[in-house]
Image 1 (cartoon, rainbow, N blue to C red):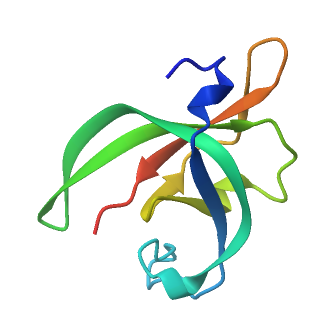
Image 2 (cartoon, helix red, strand yellow):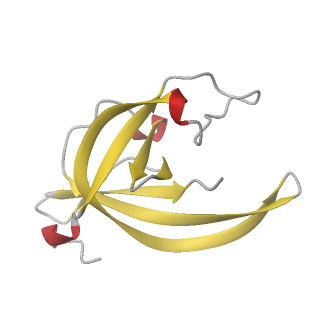
Length: 116
């Protein structure tokens, strides 16, 4: 994805806030859609940047990390408390928005896709 090209903002990204109860260890339930409410929806883009496999609780899992690109905006809260949904795929936000370039027209957010 060319990060200076607005034509790459070709997907609707819905950012949601967790409103449910965390699990027993305090983690958000990223896959339980009824525990999330929409905050805002914007045009954006997504580019996968890395993947890794790891084992948690004896289960092989995979994590694919993405850069989400959106037009620069003010954020209502710490974005790490939000998740993003693009075409039904859920993303856990890993970083605050980072301004791209000297003109500060776009922001990047690092996110990891949540797998069932």
